[in-house]
Length: 119
Image 1 (cartoon, rainbow, N blue to C red):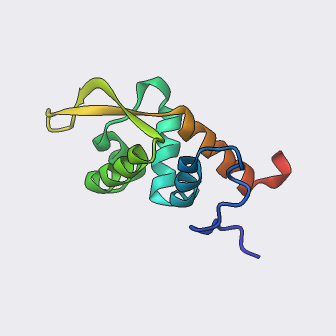
Image 2 (image 1 turned 120 degrees about the vertical axis):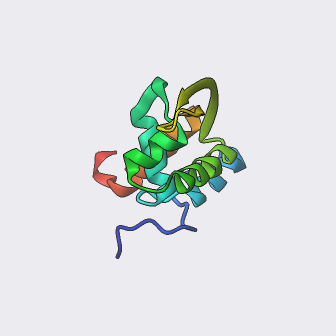
């Protein structure tokens, strides 16, 4: 049996009483996918958050890819835009994003699914 999470296997990551959006979010984020890596980076950033440019640099992916993944996470309610801006390496203002409580919950569930002995 593979330890890799399946895109459509949400078992163990959501609960019957969770809102339907939790199941949708869990189905859309795999732990080692770009979405998962963006979510982890935003978790690690804490209140400081990250811009798409910073995410791209940190994860060594294109800024546009980081932005696309971040937007998908934002649409799922796992990431939120702040009112803050920081300059990109080119000096342009960029929005700062942070992980939401739902995003933290999902990361914990993904971690538990990958490491069942740590429950």
